[in-house]
Image 1: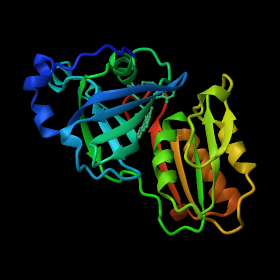
Image 2: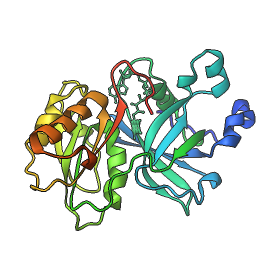
Image 3: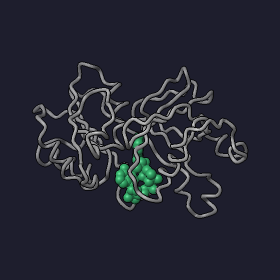
Image 4: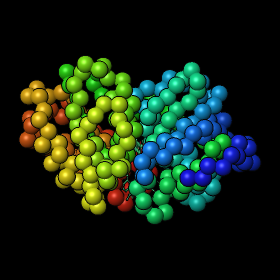
Length: 255
Ligand SMILES: Cc1cc2nc3c(=O)[nH]c(=O)nc-3n(C[C@H](O)[C@H](O)[C@H](O)COP(=O)(O)OP(=O)(O)OC[C@H]3O[C@@H](n4cnc5c(N)ncnc54)[C@H](O)[C@@H]3O)c2cc1C
């Protein structure tokens, strides 16, 4: 990611219809959290008072809307990330972008060109992910793309409510620090798609007998496999499991 100072909006930004319709902010901080994850802070007066909450989805405009429509590539215009942290009084929101390394990805190209001072248009989807608030304990499972959403949800849970789970990342160095510890596993070259490793790691957890509430996020097929394990092998009801597919091989820009 470039880090040059450039606070001036481009002509397109100044006259863009979408900019008036959606809130936006400037990139105030870019911090490399791991070799593959970067925290990005968006800040500005339009973000003052925005009541971000755990489970909120942040849709970043990664390409100009009208040119995307003209190319019949409307899907290029937005990419979806999770609120990691926010301060409504100060007017900032943090997201964490995972570099999955797939060539020609709109989100990765946008992240690579992101620079301090750049104006970013974004859309807030409040509570896109809702985890039941009254569970006696919580289970989390997912990989790098799920980590930011996990972070916000974990931070909001009462400290005396037990949390268990598995956080998978590419290597030992690729785990971001979460507010509550989860069991860490590393793929070490294996794919995150249809990941039996994640299922096995959840199966190996010593869980309480009574089901709690589970939040499974990340690659679509993997989280289906984890849910199948909970339902078929551990006797959970589907009502107790929140699943959120974030991506899957061959599909672009899931939201
Ligand atoms: C509600 C929600 C919240 C999300 N939160 C976050 C978040 O906080 N941080 C984050 O980094 N991502 C998050 N994602 C996932 C992110 O939106 C996707 O990874 C998205 O595809 C990235 O866009 P892209 O342009 O980089 O790749 P795309 O152009 O959309 O995808 C191109 C190809 O890249 C591959 N690909 C995409 N993502 C991955 C991946 N993670 N690993 C391996 N291959 C991949 C697939 O084969 C895909 O077909 C979230 C998604 C959703 C729906």
